[in-house]
Image (tube, rainbow, N blue to C red; front, side, top):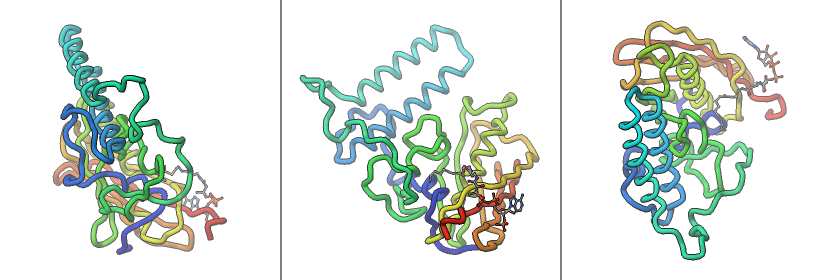
Amino acid sequence: MTSAPQAGPGAASTANTPDAADAPDAPGDGAATSADGARGLAERAAALGRELATALVSAGDEARLAAQLRELAARLGGLAGPAPADGTPPADTRARPAAHHGQEPASRSGAVGPDEDDSPVRRGDITPISSPRNPLAPPLVIEREADGSAVGRASLPLQYQGPPERVHGGIVCLMLDQVLGSAAHPKGAAPAYTRVLEVEYLAATPLDAPLTVRGWIERTEGRKRFLAGTVAHGDTITARATGLWVAPREAG
Ligand SMILES: CCCCCCCCCC(=O)SCCNC(=O)CCNC(=O)[C@H](O)C(C)(C)COP(=O)(O)OP(=O)(O)OC[C@H]1O[C@@H](n2cnc3c(N)ncnc32)[C@H](O)[C@@H]1OP(=O)(O)O
């Protein structure tokens, strides 16, 4: 096991998950006009995107869906605030430059990895499982434990369903990839990538229920890091995984 906070690609992908205290206000609270309005706006809009996805896949009649769409549209419009007279977006909400592909991690909360810099769009900011600004992500909130392991928590709504009432197996695997990837990056470790990920599905992973995903390093051999992890609902381990993360040779 490692004991330090991590850095690296897996880490970066998890580090943008906000602490509860740092999380944006609930969506629909009005226009995001604070100094870090771009991030707040993006995260609020992403939250509405998640609500939209849930509404679209939920059983219901068209009238009910239409009402939900109108309500969401109103809340989305409320986030944007009044349009400037000349149509120019305010400076802090302009489209950011395309993502770079550097290795530096990002952290919103500091709970995992060092604090993020102010670079435009950070790789860790956009993963489809942990990013608060990506409406595809639940998001899974990942933190580093004192012993160096990583723990992610999420409750997955209907759009993540595979078999009825169960989380899709690919999503279970995605959560494990992300959390084990975070655990694979103790502070100062070279970036490493998933080389092997084996998942055993032991029991149903329920929708709309608190899930805990854990990952830890079992051993390290040079540039190879062997990981293990679990997904649990309460005391029930619904999946477990082992994996190998490898730093490219050129990383030294
Ligand atoms: C930053 C923010 C964004 C991050 C998002 C979150 C990421 C979440 C995690 C991911 O999704 S990572 C993305 C998916 N993974 C990849 O894209 C990795 C694709 N694979 C590679 O790029 C290369 O395979 C890799 C750099 C990982 C390694 O290539 P190499 O050519 O250097 O090595 P190779 O693949 O031949 O094998 C590496 C070592 O593993 C060993 N190995 C391979 N399979 C094994 C196995 N099954 N069991 C044990 N060892 C195994 C292999 O023998 C070898 O050991 P040795 O170096 O000691 O000889």
